Amino acid sequence: MKQALVTGAAGFLGSHLCDKLLAVGMSVIGMDNFITGSMSNIAHLEDNSNFSFINHDVCQHIDIKGDLDYILHFASPASPIDYLKIPIQTLKVGALGTHNALGLARAKNARILVASTSEIYGDPLVHPQTEDYFGNVNTIGPRGVYDEAKRYLESITMAYHRYHGVDTRIIRIFNTYGPRMRLNDGRVIPAFMGQALRGEDLTVFGDGSQTRSFCFVEDEIEGIYRLLMSEYHLPVNIGNPDEITILHFAQEIIALTGTDQKIVYKELPKNDPLQRKPDITKAKEILGWEPKVGRAEGMQRTYNYFKSLSQEELNKMEHRDFTSFKN
Image (cartoon, rainbow, N blue to C red; front, top):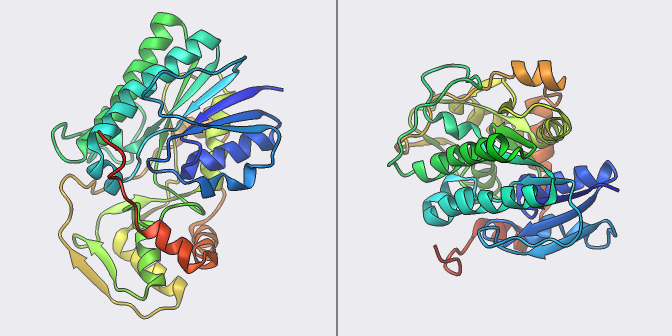
């Protein structure tokens, strides 16, 4: 049985990734320090004999007994609220955490897949974004801590690949959504759905003309797995190219939830990307992958998940205290 380590295992994508690897017959070690993850995301795996969990900060040395075949490095704050509240921790996990994960991959002779992001493109001057676009990032802006952490992650990964011969994969993840997202993570889908569930007006930043492209988590995880199993070591975009304006999306949420909330407008945050759409030509050609779940189906499944939660669970998802995590 192949064995994999998933860092950030209690997060949104990390937990779904654990499910996928277990489903294909692997033994999985999950690792998280719960700075943004939640034990509830992996509670269903407690009795799975092929799953074990280690509470650990990847910015500290990682020690795993026995063999490892795969490492999937997904530990990182991944939303504006998170990395604005814990900016130094965000930088450290992209630098020190990635360094430790790569060092472990080298020691274990394991294949490692690192999670990068479409945010490395910044506020893009090229549309749609292809993997050979170098990006337009404000290094000293408030969002720069996340953008540069992921750009560094890619650089050190390629350095380990070229200098040490480590078997590496780099995925650039575009906006992904689905069950297990946190309502308070600051991204547009949980924000809109949380407002709808609470009977609040939907908040649109700017005039709503900025665009996003949303990929359902089931499709995203399949793309990640195919890249892990491939022989391609350069970055690959995994996302859904079905682009929509935020204003149109807010209108879709109101129609989906059957509510009569208004749309209110607030100032656009600094350096918020005005366009986001992946070019997935490489994913199609190299991995034979493209998204299957349409936005209407994916949004319904996501809304059903949030509606199924108890009020206590919703309250926990809405309020997050970072005071116990020191930068």
